[in-house]
Image (cartoon, rainbow, N blue to C red; front, top):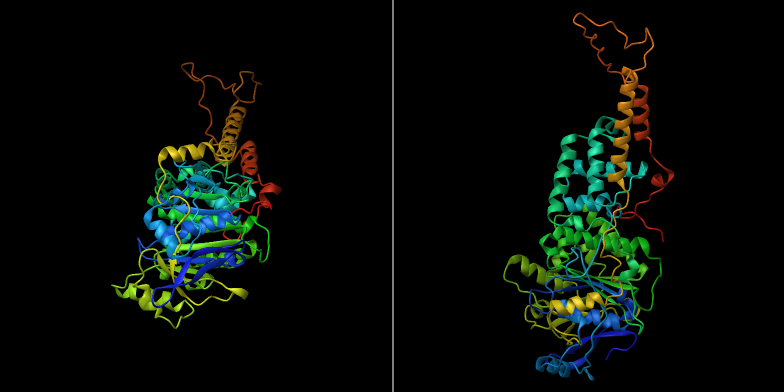
Length: 514
């Protein structure tokens, strides 16, 4: 079975359906990425579960999304059931030991796990525009907003910070337009309305502090096993664009933060991207190009990215070419597109003369898959028809009470549960507006002689008109007072060296210090 250098996936079968050999994933090629595909109900979740178990036992931290709640069972010890024991015998898994795994539950909404947050600055204009589905003109304004925030030292932490900055930009549209290009109030208003929709959908819970520390999803236990971070995504899937944008942000954060390690003996982290088609649906070409670049380069950081989806056609060719370890469950071929998907899947494997790949894909049973992993020198192995091994942890979801107990015993308990709202763009812009208003009032009082002490011949000593009334005050001038001009100058030039030194990474997110 698997040793310290590999993960046991299952056993391949001969043409007569008898046992052939164990199929394994070599840990030294675990960072060469992978793909798990297949129709609904063919066993993708179990494959993800046994891969996560294998990486964890090898000391590799894992991050994965739990779309249906079934993956949560990995936190509890498995039980001997007849069909599991039978499968263990078929693949010659002896001994078939049961165990629970170290799991940290996360949830963007803070309901089924620890809250996950990121600041608006860390998300960056490109991913935020993708999340909000902005037009090209609106995306340009978003880039201007982030540029101004960097130049003027305005911290963008949560959604109210971004709302305040956009309102400020609308007020300064003429001034900003002369520096960066046309900024129209209707476009700013459209962005603000989109932010309101996001807020109503619960996205506001994601933006803020304390932001997720990458080190907390890269933990190992005292006995040397990698912690498995499970993101509760059942509610998150109601907003699939937020789900895809969050996972893309996390992947880009890993790329920006982690140092180069070359080809390690085993990955530093394995990242499972379930329902991966959501990442690429209606995505602009520039974003797909950036994703392809991240996938290609993040391997040298020791991170393995495994895409899990129904159809290999869901993944762009440039990304598909980077995925070396592949598990293909059954596909149906009733429609022309499904038939094309079967042909595409078959063509990506190194052929096996014992069977026709395209025909076999449509005949695979539940828990059975075509498997090809990287062998010595990184060469793809010949595709094999494989029975997937049974998991050692519980098959199926845990109960709410079990989940809450595990959350209470989590190593990150108390670190993310309370929101921190420090001074940022919202408060800073409010303060500047208040100072400007106070200065304007003082200037008006000084200009109109607000004091009762007067000097003859210098205003406020006009003789009363008939009837005892004082002459009306002169109309205010359209020219700015010195105080008004000074205040506006200060507001425009609040830039600091810290703000100007901000650097953004490959996906436009804020680069953290290494």
